[in-house]
Amino acid sequence: MPAESLEQSLRATRWGAALAADQLARVAAESGEVVVPTSGYVCRSGEPVDAWLGVLDGMVKMMISTPSGRASTFTSIPAGGWFGEGSLLKTEPRRYDVIALRDSRIARVPRRTFEWLLNTSIPFNRFLLVQINERLGQFIGMLEAQRLHDPDARAARCVAGLFNTILYPGIGKKLEVSQEEIGYLAGVSRQRVNQALHALEAAGLLKVEYGAIVINDLDGLRHYGS
Image (cartoon, rainbow, N blue to C red):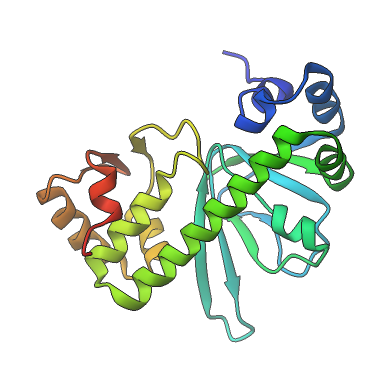
């Protein structure tokens, strides 16, 4: 099957579906897309923020690195996720790297188009309010898990965060994600993630498949260890 056009991909998003036809056509005409190979940079810390970014296909991770080489992953963003609105609103240089965990198709909505939508579309503004609030809740939850919970609970909360249907609509119950990727996000080793996932599987909360996770009880994952 031929790949979807950018306009078709944008129309399938929650915010794109809320736009008038002429608004969507303008956004599609002014936007672009790139394919970033596995381990390639979608964007880099310190760069000017010139676009709002969406993952149309694939998966990326948001992370920071220190000059000494230490790295910390904030979150992973699967297909359907959009990011970078905070940096655009603050008009500051980007404060994190975004790296493709697999070959990823990335949409780029230019700053001028993003700002035009802010000034002309009430549904788009509502979408952003929900997006920012949900992202804040996600990061607070991750911080809580890292400070208060054991590795099993941290892995559970990490997996649950990847299945956030508000940030990543259309995610379904199955996601192709490696144990190494979960380890980056949860801040534990791949070997410890393997143990945690099998404990969560034994509890009936998820099913581990080769290179993928299938969710059985999302609410149970969100509250595991509480």
